[in-house]
Every structure is written in structure tokens, then in C-alpha cells.
Length: 580
Ligand SMILES: [Zn+2]
Image 1 (cartoon, helix red, strand yellow):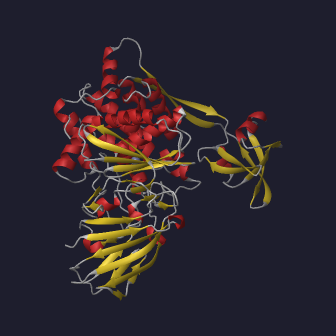
Image 2 (tube, helix red, strand yellow):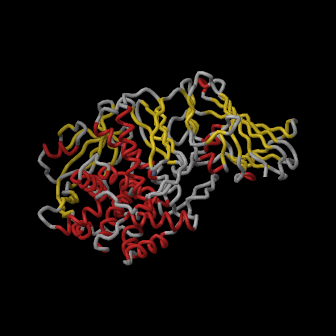
Image 3 (cartoon, protein in one colour):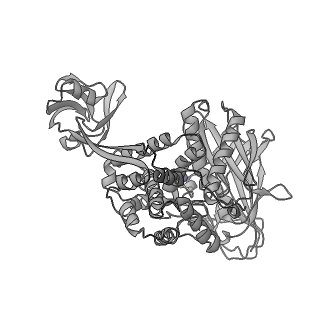
């Protein structure tokens, strides 16, 4: 099988273009299909990277050859057997995010699934990337290794697209975790205290590495983009890309959140990149890849990034419990929690989670937040059922050994339940049915209280319209109408411009106005819809708000302290688990 030689040139970065060549010597198939991925693993939305491709052309043995575009992202070349092939194109890269590529006068961030086409017949071939860019750019950061010629090398296309490349004049710092060298590229101006951040990041990485107890990377790279506004992160096999606001480093809360984000993307090197649902690899880059298990891949990672802040000492137990409480109350007060099941939220990520609209809170939940809450419940329940002998770490470790290392494949939901049985001796079928395949409310009170966090549910009745608004050009515009609230049934719509309620002018906060007029029951709104004024009269019945309180159990109860220690304390690993 021939190797695939890519060459990328960025002669004019200020124009945001790169030129890509793909060389194949002694092709051994009759036709070739060059395909630009439609999505990028880790971000479950069809993004159509082919829309940034132009002037695709090819030559066979040095002579120009016709290229046939057969669908939105495929270019076909015939009569290729035994010949030397060159396929080339220009690619436009000016969308800044962790899941797209960005080139400008200062730097190039190559998110490879949006730059390098796959040669479908040779997706499993190894190859190299020759890079040509401004001599003024001194640094290149990527998890790919270089060959003797200084070109980057990859084992197959999966590895190529899972290894982003940052080129420019960014700062770099290094540290080790479990003997594995780590580097971080700090891109863009920022007010980071680098020495402090390096220590804290190493601490977080060490904390995350303890969960599985084994580090599978030869080398790991953080690409940290400092930007004016925005955020987000994306995991890769041996690296990740994370975005932070450049002047936010001295804000304690934002700094903690960013450490949590780094921990999240870092933990993905185990959870999803290696330990993974059956459907998430090998990938089909030409269409959506569906799985019911993003609650595990993302939600459990979300749980561990919050837990890591506690384990690494950045927050205390009370703060962790407060965070958990916020997740639960936000989830249970979201109308979508009684509509969409966790498994559905995962499968429909492509059309719902990643494409929200004004009605999303009424019809969907996030597999991040409900997955996080489910992981917390499961972790506590494992401690409860095993009398503190096991916790979720033990299950994660087992799955990693059994499916990634021994079987080298993903696992199914059924196999996850089997793993729970193996580790705990208990049957978790009902737990998974209830939390993943139904919209029933979890048994927060029973599970958390038994594990040492006193949990209590109350229903608060309050006069609220259920309307969220924003002030736009001095006008109060409806942005969201809660389907559990009176305004939904009364007929207030998103985009309505609210003028008054029972004659009192509305200036952004509707509920303040309702309070001022004394919640009279019957309310007449004057509003503008589609440029026409109208009146709507409705009955303002009280809305029910769910309020869970969570509190650490106090007072000399050793068994509860014991269970909290097993649940929320640092993992205590046996020595032999500390391999590479
Ligand atoms: Zn994630």
C-alpha cells in the first residue's frame, strides 16, 4: 500500500488560504476518491468542511487529469492504477473555534479534518505532512512526531485528523505526568501567571490520571488559544485544544472553570478516545455517527471534571455539593427533563444539542448535565451498594482494561451494565432503565442521603410568567417561554415585544412588573407582534418551582464519613496500577 504524502503551503496567511497537495506514488487501485470530512469527531454536527475547498485538480504521471465531483464532499479520479498521482486544492480557513481551522497573519491553527482530505482507498495508509510557512513563525505544536526530513508523520488517516497543529510564535511550557512528557502551547496575548498555571494544570492532569491509573500516551499536547471572547474545548487522541478569554486569567472563578475545562478535555484521552461506546470509532467521516451513549462519554467526563476540582483541592466539599445542587435544580426545572430521555438526547445530538432553537429548553435536556448528575447518582449508589468497597473509578478502570486494552473495541450499554455487575455484584439494569431510557425523576433523596449528602425536595409556588426577555434597542423582546408557565398557555410568543401588563410599562423584567401590580390573577398584556399591536389577557396561576437542597451530613456519623471519603475522596490506587 503506498504511503500518502501531504504537502501544505501557507504563503499568504493574511488571506486565510492554504494550498494542499496529496501525492501518491505507484497507486495500486483503478480509481481514487478524495473526500473532505463532513464532521469532526467529538463535535456532533455536520459542518460540511468541503464548502471551504476550491480549485481542486489532479494530474496523473505529470499530465493534467479530469476530476469528477460525485457528491458534496467527494472528488473522483479514474485510471490511476500503477501511476503517480497528484491531487491538489486551495482551502479557506477563517472560522475560529476548536473544531474548525483558522489562518491569519499571526498564526495557523490546523484542525485537520477541515484541512486534509481523506484518500478513501488508503484511509489506513501511513504517510507524512510537509509544511511550508512563514520563516517568522518559530514554533510548531502538535502530537504528531517528525521524521528525519522534518515532516510530520501519521500511522493512518484517523491519527492525522485527530492531531491538530498550531504554528506561530506561541509560548510553550512543559511538565511530566506519570512519566509522560506534556507540553502546552499558549497562543495569543494573555494575562496568565504561567508558573502558577503550569503547577495547577499539572496537578489537575495528575488528578485525572489517577482515575484510570495508567497513562497511554507517549507525549501529550495542550493547545491553548487565548481570545477576546468565547470558549470551548475539543479532545484528541494525544492532545486537546482549549479556548480561554485572554484577560480572564486573574479572575478566580473563570480560572477555576478553565482548569475544569482542561481537566475535561484531558480526561477524554481515556474516556471516549480509548474507552468508548461501540459506535464512536472507527469513524465514518461522510455522515453522522449515531450513539445512545454520549451521556457516558460527555456526561461522565463532565462529572469527573467537577470532581477533579475537589480532588485536586481547588474547591472544598461544600462547594462541590453546591455545584451538584445547581446541576440538579437546573435540570429538574427545565421542562425538557420530562420530555427527552438521556439516550435520545445523545442520538439526536446532531439535530438538537448542536442545533438549539427557542423551544429547546422545553423539549430537550443536555447529555452533559443530566449525564453529570447520573454519574454522581451512580457513583453514590455504587458506594452504597458495595458498603464503600467500590466507586465509579473502579468501573472506569475495569472498562478501560476490558474493552480498550483486552478487546480493543468499544462497548455497548448492556456491556456497561455487565461491568457494573462485575465490579459491584449488584444489578444496575433498573438504574440504567430509569436514568437513561426514561424521564422519571431520579431518587436523589434516597441515593444521596444514604451516601452522606442530606437531600430534600420541596416545591415552591411562585408568581412567575415563565417568560425570559432581552432588552434590544430599548424594547423588551421575548426570548423564551417556559412550557410549564402561564404565559405559554396564555399565548405569549418568542419575538413578541412586550409593552405593558395591566397598564404598567414593562422594562425588560416581566416578573418584577407582575409583582408591582400585585399578581392580580387576570393580566392583560399589550404587545407588538409582527409590527401589529395586540392585547392578550391570561390567568396568572402560580408556577411550581422544584427546589432540591443538598447538605453534607454532619455530626459524628463515622459510616457516612467513610462513604463520603470513598465517594468524594482521592482515589487510593494499588501500586501496580501506576504503569505507563
Ligand atoms: Zn467533552
